[in-house]
Image (cartoon, rainbow, N blue to C red; front, side):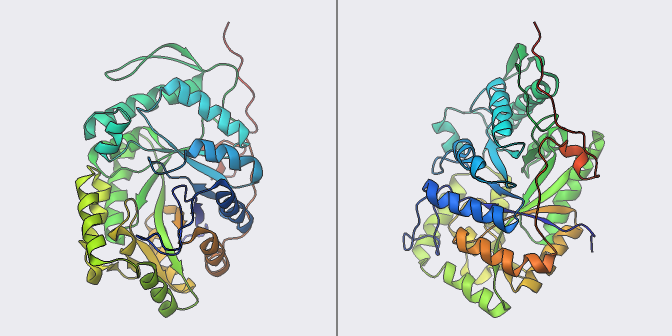
Length: 386
């Protein structure tokens, strides 16, 4: 068993929340008061950070993070950065500003996008691999701007001519950490070239091992090493039986017709390799939802994104999480319905078994050195060239 405890992040449901999925029964809208309650709970309970989703049905993550950062102390905010939706220069300035507003608590989730229909609505008409080529160019410009303060770049999709960042860079150096998940060869290439933490949705451990080995090898070819994170739902109760009852209750208002319609929509509206892998785990069938010991795919019957949950007692779920940790996973990005109550349940039941205690935030540290106990101090503002 690894000596270092896992880091657990939580989720901010910016498209709404509730005790059931696939129904309006008990729905909670994503108003800022409710999101603040979840963020304050996660901060108080000791979650290391919070993921903010992105999409046309979500409140804008940058706006929500800007509103919640001043009200929290140690919680980090993993916010989506969407290549192709804005220029690298504007994105660099926004990232530097939010990193300073949050006192060095910004993390960036690079989301290339896997729904051609959604992307077309925002004017992005490139095919799957070309979107990743755009992402590569975007991150090349973005990283150089924040690391060096200036860049000249001409690519197929993007150009930056004598671009300069200005007076203020980010507190975290050389820039806020980059997180990314992509299961296709094109996505894995972007991860190997640019990002700091590679994310995967929860799949059976053998599938996750194969994916991480592929990513690890691609990064090694470039002389780089990556950290790894796992995105998963958690259904934790005092006993295994109670946890499985809670899982059944979560989908208790789903009809077969609702499931069939959702599965058709989810398959028709994606070219994401990772999303298709999630859908293939269960095939849309209620009788095939336990896809690995304690790994339940019920959420994926009607929801896009991660569709799997670890279900069981604290001891059972901890055992399953440690299996992923043995593969190299360091951070778990978890969620549970409803997110306010489940944040407390996970912290109170699971944290003690995993050895997770209170966390402290040290602003301005170099995130690359933090894992080794080094502290490079607080970055000074950059002086713009004349």
